[in-house]
Length: 307
Image (tube, rainbow, N blue to C red; front, side):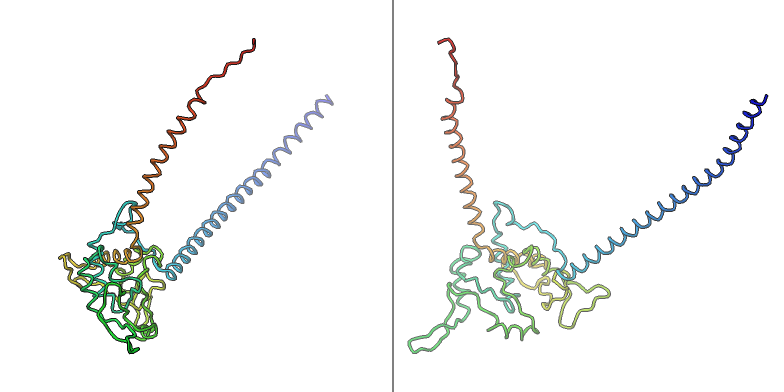
């Protein structure tokens, strides 16, 4: 009886301790669950804030880069971009007309001669007639003096200004660049030039442009001294093509691309010839290798261990 009473007391105490510990443990577990949920919420908010901050900083950097280097120009399908494509020579002729009537008053092309146009956009007689319209200072003569003469095919395009100082004075301090290599001197050359010429627009709200400058998002800084020069019907094409702004932009870019790389068509043709000849040489080498090595590769070696 004594042993049974002792056992009952021990069981009663154990049950009492378990009943007391259960609410305590449940309180601690619920508290831990609330703390985990709270920390997860804080962590999610922190990650969201970091993402928003990164996005804003990226957009700020992109906007600053766009303001400094200009808006990235779109890519246009130029007819001479293909591996075996050639220039649009009718467009080169129209582009030269646009250069003469619109661009030549400010921009020079000091690396291009009138003879370069022969066979590309004009006949020899037409190029001679254009060259004869200018006067070139030459000399000295037998008396040691300089003189003027009509231009000839070997003369280069005339300079609009005598020197850089005169050019800056006439353009409010801005120096019009030489256009001979402009499509090679600018990143994404033809696309950039076309986007620049056709990209003039009113400045957006909050952006002020200094007097004498014009807003163009494709120009580094957004403010350019050159006004919008290409307007519909600004020139009258000889072949009757409508002189829209986009058409003139395409033609002048074709002309400038040719001026920067007049040897492109010959280079592509020569490259195609070399690839064709090397392909023939490769076929001949492969046949010769097969002819010489076929005997060695097809022979059979027999080992006679008896004799």
